[in-house]
Structures are given as C-alpha cells and as structure tokens.
Image (tube, rainbow, N blue to C red; front, side, top):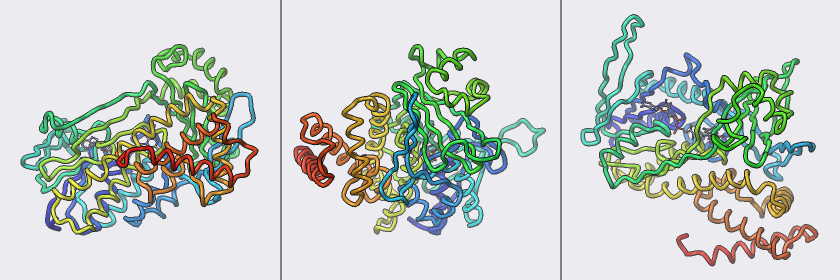
Length: 469
Ligand SMILES: Cc1cc2nc3c(=O)[nH]c(=O)nc-3n(C[C@H](O)[C@H](O)[C@H](O)COP(=O)(O)OP(=O)(O)OC[C@H]3O[C@@H](n4cnc5c(N)ncnc54)[C@H](O)[C@@H]3O)c2cc1C
C-alpha cells in the first residue's frame, strides 16, 4: 500500500467523503468523484431523508478523522423516544438510565458538507462534482465519468477517464461499481435486493409562530400505528423532519390508495390527528413530496482483482428501522482504517480481510433492521411485548451498568460488533419472552431477581447455540 498509489473513490456521499478524508489524512493520493453537483453550492435533497440519527458507531468513526465534535456541534441530542399513542397522552421513554446517553439528529447535507469542507481544507484530494461514473474496467483499474461542459451554452458531454491503482465504490444503494462487479465476476458474485412492502414519505413540521419547536426537542418522536408508523426528528432551525412509513399497496392504508386530498385528510384524521394540527399544509406536502422505496441489498464478494472494493450502502444497503445505515457505513471506514494499522502491506490482502471481517456484521445489521420493522409493526400491541419493554426500561434505567437491551447493544455499544449485538440481543429477547410466558418472571419481583433470571436464561440459550452461530 504505497503512498504513491493512486486511489479513486467513486461517490462523495457520507461514506465516500469520510473515506477520502481519512485516506488523505494518512498521506494517500486520493481522487473523489461525485455524480451530483456540489451540495454546498445548491440544494439537492428534495425527497431524500434530510436528517439522520447519528449514534456511537458513527461518532467513533468520525472521531478517527477528528470530525466527531464538529458533527455534534451541528446536531441535536435525542435522549429517548416520545411515544404518541392514539387517544392517550404521549409518554417519554429514555434510551438509558444515564442522562448523557443519546442519539443525535443531524442534517444529511450538513454532515456531508462538513466532511467535504474538511477534505478541501486539507488540500490533498482531487475533487470532481457533476461527474457520474458510467463505466469501470476491473482489469485495468480505470473508470470513465461523464462530464458536463462548464459552459452552460454547450450541451456536449465529455468523458473523463481516471486511471488508478485502487478503486473504492462508495456510490450508494444503486452502485455502478457493484453492478460492474456483478457483470465482470459472473456467477461468483452473489447479489440479492429485497424490496420492503413499505415505502416512506417525508413531511415537515415548521417551527411554531414564536419560532420555537412545536414538540419536545430532545426526543425521537414515534407514532406507532400497527401496519404503518410515523417518526419525527428535530432540526437546528426548530423544525422537525417527519417520515411516514406505509405499505405501497395495502388497502386501505397504502400509498397507492391514499392520494387525493379527502383520502389524505381522512387517513390522518383517523390515525394521526395531532399531525393535522401541527402541519397546516400537510395535504400539499403529502402530494408534492415523493414516496421513496426501501430495500435490503446483500452481496459479495465486495472486492475483486485485488484492486476494487465496495463499501457503505453500495455493499450493504439496509432498511432504516434501526437508524444504522450511515453509522454502519462510517464504521466500515473505521474498520478499514484499523486494518491498515495491523501490518497488512498489500491492498488485495486489506480488501480480503475487510470483506471477511465485515460481511457478517453487515448481514447482522441488515437482519436486525428488518426485525425492528416487524417488531414495531406487529409486536408493539402484544401484551407480552409491552410487559417485556416495561421490565427492560426499568432495568436499563436502574441497573444500567448490568443490563442493556438489544437496541442499546446495537446503538450504544460499538465495542460489540453488530453480529455480537444481534446474537446476544436476540437470545435476551427470547429469554425474557419465554420467562414471561412461563410466569417465571413478573413485575412484582425485585429488580436484581429479574436481572439474575434474565441473565441466567439468556446464557443458557446462548450455550444451546452452535459455537459459531
Ligand atoms: C428514510 C431513510 C432514513 C434513514 N435514516 C438513517 C438514520 O437515522 N441513521 C443512519 O445511520 N442511517 C439512516 N439511513 C441510511 C443512510 O442514509 C445510508 O446508509 C447512508 O446514506 C449511506 O451512505 P453512503 O455514502 O454509502 O451512500 P449515499 O449516502 O447514498 O451516497 C452515495 C453517493 O454516491 C453518489 N453516486 C451514486 N452513483 C454514482 C455514480 N455513478 N458516480 C459517482 N457518484 C455516484 C451519490 O450521488 C451519493 O452522493 C436512512 C435511509 C433512509 C432511506
């Protein structure tokens, strides 16, 4: 891994920008090419999720590049969930007994711009915008990009070819680099894309008349409604970004069936009356904003020919129900960086080890995100599930040193890999549910007795599993 090697990164989104910054900080020669215009010069994010929950794994990776505090400075901490049930008072459920535990609401373009500014300030990365990658040759390690003429009078597009020693594909869920791996690696490349039954639509709650937040600002707001749900995250300008998750096709509550103004009004009156008050132009927003699809991409191998590697959403796009897609993509960069410090000298060996180490964690967070989707939809109304959550909330608040829910392991414990968090978290969930169903665990027991029972049964379940499971 010679410092003179030419590194090409395709995609200057969140993952590609952090990777470019880190590799340049390490003294490598980096070229970063982005399909879209520079988001710092023009607003591009209509219809994309405009704020995201940044949590410990993402922060750890940003810290590696000296960017964590800068990111926190433009984010808002959310210390728990505010649950809005129909016809009942909302209640706040903290993420932990530790008042400092929080996930952070951050603007996607704001964070991306922060990383691009840091890259430019370093002055070592060749940056190209408005240049979609249109072709890639794995054998020669060269990529072609379409470039618009800088003269607006000129309609002609030219093709820029960049020759590199290694190429990183950070070009998101629809990755051209991944498609090339698939085409040029043939049957050796395994790929699946599973679309979710549900899509999403973003809406916005403006600040109140006095400019203040219209909802509690230190919480992630959730309106769970069985088959569909809404979440809202606060923004620095005192607005909230609201995301409706709903089936595309289901009748009557599916995007395909809720289109006209009366249909939209009726749906919100029935399910989310509060939001009709909070968003006076809700119908216009609903009709104007696009509906986005959600899917899970699993594929591999992520590397080819010793000189190409995909990472971030290009390698493992996931559904957003754990708020981990960006965090996982940032963690990819951290894992790669740590491997670079481990004595590996060849890019090919680095890429092999990265893919080997990271694939099962990417699969784990993809599966956890789907679990959470089903859990939120189906289980939240189940009495056993509600009792389990009640017991867990008390344990997390009053025994925070000894007890962590699956959500906490995934979100607040980057020292555990996603796979470890999934294995232990799932066993723990199963243990509590079994103990409740068998009437061995109940709310009248002392907390320490509950803790011992849960830990004992969780360990027993883990021991029953295969050693490599
Ligand atoms: C509704 C929703 C909510 C989400 N909420 C969260 C959350 O709360 N927390 C969280 O951690 N994650 C969340 N995510 C996931 C998160 O958005 C992604 O995981 C993250 O953006 C992945 O980063 P990336 O850089 O790999 O891909 P992207 O952000 O998609 O960036 C890819 C970049 O590559 C560029 N590109 C694409 N094709 C080409 C090409 N041919 N040539 C050159 N450039 C190209 C794109 O323009 C883009 O800039 C959410 C996702 C959705 C859909």
